Image (cartoon, rainbow, N blue to C red; front, side, top):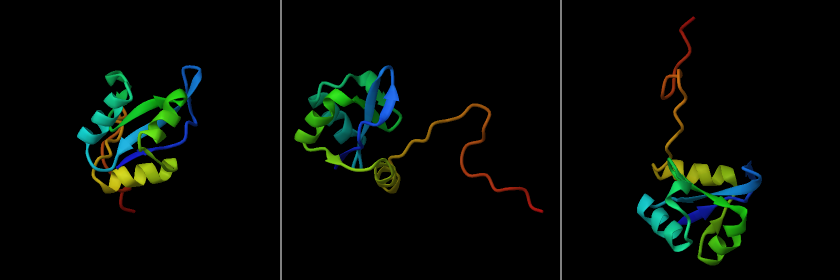
Length: 98
């Protein structure tokens, strides 16, 4: 299923939504192509979608969800790709034993 969060993310002088699939990247890429979203809008596990395309995405079948639900759904589906931070270890790190 294609999911979209509200256009509340500021950047480059406009507001953005995140467009994801909780099924597959193939489904996500096909949906984005149908909306004429350029490939450069894809980042790790989602497309950044400008506010002007939000209503079009809904009309095409994207399901509106909150940002937290969106992340929870793609994480549960195994499709979440976290951003790598330079100089920080990847994965969960346990605190040192006392």
